[in-house]
Length: 350
Image (tube, rainbow, N blue to C red; front, side):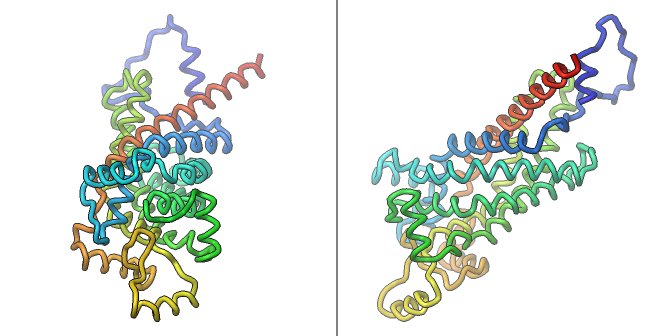
């Protein structure tokens, strides 16, 4: 707040005091300390919705590639998966499940960014170069936001698959509750957190480091190009984090796209499995348990180790621009609220 106010009320007649060559006062990253908690939530919610809505078709292709990885039908490339979707169902299939995404993305990202900002302030102690604090804050943020987003993410991924048999978001929710129980919505929560913990640790640490690096590289134009700085740093962070965590994302998709039975139904299914195959939503073989190790062994047995990297290219194509869109929108939202707060404070003083 004080830094921004000083910059706005500089006297143009004053001569600048010479500073050492390595002194760059303009690269200090604004912490937006004047923002309220609810303002972080609104900025994050808007950013999350715009990000996921814009990139939803790519996410649909990724889901098809990962869910069909162990099935008889193998869409092993982006072109084949996209062609299969368009040929069998048409362009509208790329947006199946977008309603569930809309219901989950807003609240989840509101929690995501507000928790991150609170934790970053607590752990970093105001030091913008503390990468460890950024990583830990990202992990805290994803644990909280995944608790909100995982149920709708499960619904979204089931609706994205052509053989799911659900007639919309509410039909999927109703049938999952009645047929599989509430626990089915959180079947992949552990895997999601285990995946997103390293993802967000890499993502936030990379974003903050790249952003600061770009501003140090060009301190004179950092203010004018701040949108470009946020977009570039976000794209780099999203791409790197996506590549590192693809195997766990494959496991998560496999778990969310199989049908989960109650204990009694599971015993019946075990008996019937002698006569028929027990399959998941997409036609894939069911796993013996929800153990991450069991799923990994099954994938490696059927598709080899490359099966764990299935969908990595659309995943990177999704997360790089998605992170650029998300961070740019979020930072723009923070700037809007910062200016709004400053305006109110000036009006109060006058």
